[in-house]
Image 1: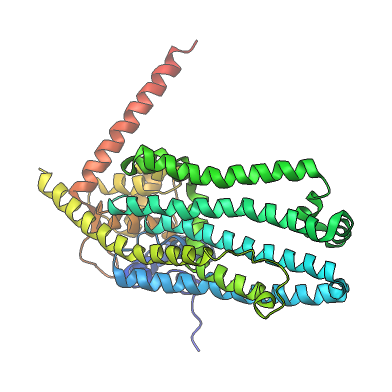
Image 2: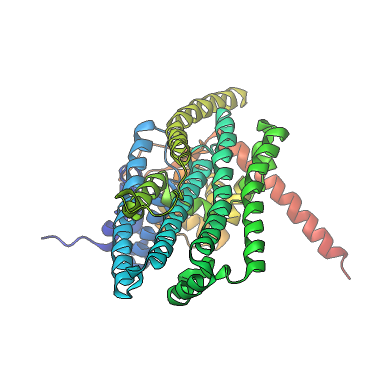
Length: 331
Length: 103
């Protein structure tokens, strides 16, 4: 069997559309550079690194709907599968851990662990939806050429703000819920065993700190909503430059968002369902941490994700017309 | 826009400056950039820039010769490069003038 040179393997780091378009030229350049004395392994490493960057960011990808659809499928698969597997693994380990420690023997401990698991599920959903929101803003709807996307981008801040508000509500509900059900003694007991994971529980031992954190969480949460209202008041047209969130997003946020993608929504939903399976199975010992209005919210996020395709087509039309205008204006 | 690319480590501006001399393929671009800027580009970085510039309509490919695909500046690319270089020149002149006025 023929051994493939390192550069050909490194080229696999690029998406297929990129390889089809630039692969032969890049291989020819690599041959020339090796002939000129450059190290083949270093060149291969550089190509692999650049290929991963292109795969993550989609930089230089033509705005063709079929290509974007392929990219969406990959973005669904790459973080989605590990996340679902990881959620299962986490749940298994947690279940074994809790039973090993004998924590689920009494009703008080049972309620505490269920509360914690519920909070974990809520946190996963918040994280996933936030990442999805970032990606929609920066990767899909962030195309500057799309005027209509500004309206969608503005609409995106409503669920984003609500998500932030939910963080505040979760913290408050969690700390107060444990206090009400268990009392200070139970809180201390669970807190001493759970250690690192018991930040929110042990906070209840310090009423002033708990109050401060709750106020902070509310400020952050409703600050997000207020930001959305202010942005609307300023005007949709000026939105991209009026929000520091968009202006200062930076490369890290862009990369993070691109890596997670729309799939983060689905991962979050599946992760939450997995974590909350014991409650759904009938052992429900607490009011739902995930309120009913989360589900239309998630549906709205998915609709916005679908709008990405519309935005891409609009961007392509807009870019075409812009190029036509510039070409006709050129001497 | 191109200045931002340069700040991020994207050699797009260097590629445009090289192509301002005339059409070049990948290896000729690498050698030219190495000569005038002292930057030794790898194939991944170079073609990453080429792909971005082509997607923005600033450069365009010419017919390939022996798997070597030459590129040339478009009218938009030339205009964008001229604007950016003027801006850079203004910044450079201002900086040098301020340094010259220092004791």
